[in-house]
Amino acid sequence: MSDSASAIPPAWLEAVHRLEGARRVLVLGASDVGKSTFCRFLAERLGAALLDTDLGQKTVGPPGTVTLGRRDASLAALHFVGATSPSRHFLPLLVGVARLAAHAEPLVVDTSGFIESAGAMLKAQKAEAVLPDHIVAIERGGELAPVLAPLAHLPIVRLAPAPRARRRTDSERAAARRAAFAAHFAGATERHLDRRTVVLQRRDLPEHPAGLLCGALDSAGICRGLSLVLEADENSIRVLSPVPEIRVLQLGALRLAADGTELRRL
Image 1 (cartoon, one colour):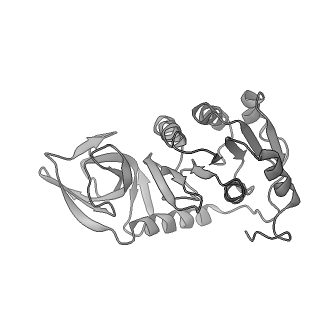
Image 2 (tube, one colour):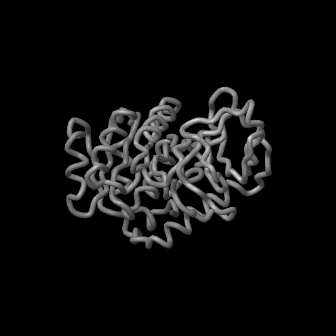
């Protein structure tokens, strides 16, 4: 979004004024209300880092991860979850949120549009992991009430959806994920990992592992990027990865084609 008076909603400028001095801001809203655009704008205005907790529609870094962006929105750190939806993956998601949130302040936290039923519980747990001092609620007509109820002790800045926000189709969302995966693997090379020395985490390697998305960690246990399993035998695992040195593979729940197309979940 252009940083001009004609492009920025006046309510956003007022929100920045109210949030000056905030330490951690958690931004909530349903899908396609302009959360990510507002988060980028707010982070830039506050000079804050951006914690992207949306697994599917990423502002920073590749899908399937929780990511921390620098003030210029470049990738500073990531935590592998291994799925593009939080369903059945709350634990690794929340671990990633807590770990990355500990490394930056001031901080703006972007969230997914998953707000129904279990989504409301997930948002409350993200708040526990982040410990925000302010909430921004972007809603059309009260749909965030169940999400905001456990957070009523915090100052809440309420905003209407962005004027330019529009609902995206499932195919548009899938195309965005495919492009983000492809960008992450651009320039990746094939590597043969010795099964005697590489450590496998999260699950066992399936009988037919081709296409399995994995997190690639160094010897300190820090995720440095993603890997895609090409094939495996009893001696080695052949992967495609932009990460030069891989000590640990965290096995995910998603299979990808070489172009980033999602095939199926485990």
